[in-house]
Image (cartoon, rainbow, N blue to C red):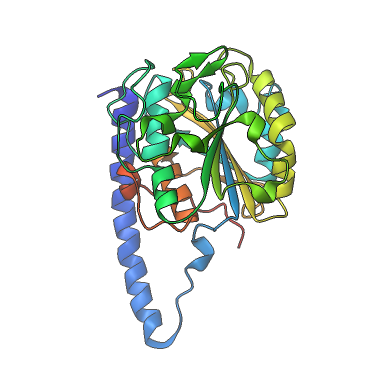
Length: 299
């Protein structure tokens, strides 16, 4: 087991212990209030946004982005939204982390090589969303055409788009970024936006990615602030020099502006939070034992 995987397992066990103790306490309190009062747990529940967009950037540690003059827009989202200061990826290199975030498991993927499209039928965020009668899409910059399963094309790389690995996710839900709507009310209830290899900071600078985010999703972020919607900005992994600690920012009306959380979270916790925010009863893979992100939501 790698150092980062061992750390994740240790932290998950510690969180499980704390959660069990908390659950016992909550049950006792619930029993007490049930005798003559009402329980008020809703304040800490995950909200249900009308629209959620998740954007994943590449290969930068927390300190390379948060507090950096190279990322003024992301830092403005952090100050006007929520900043997770102890968020971690699962492993290295990139591709397994995308599968982890999307399906609660790396699905046996250990490298960045091109996998067989539709190789897995495991549950994942999109399949759960669609099974529940909800809407889903991905918007992939430089994807040659809607639903294309090509491995690479110019600055496009399928290794950053895990939905193509699942037979239970229609390839037609993978759209080009040119199909991203200007009328945000027509967005799916849940979507991922994948910048290409330059825009996502992989081949180009933090500044390039930050500017791309502002230019392409800044208007959505502003709209989300007044339309019960959410923008999540995270990273697949760090630069291999920071224990896989990555920046993650949440912004929109459901988020308390200027909030931070120092609770240790990882991709599985983010997946769990996205599932619960969609009202899904199912949880894919390790999301079933993960924790919701809390302490940042507006009451």
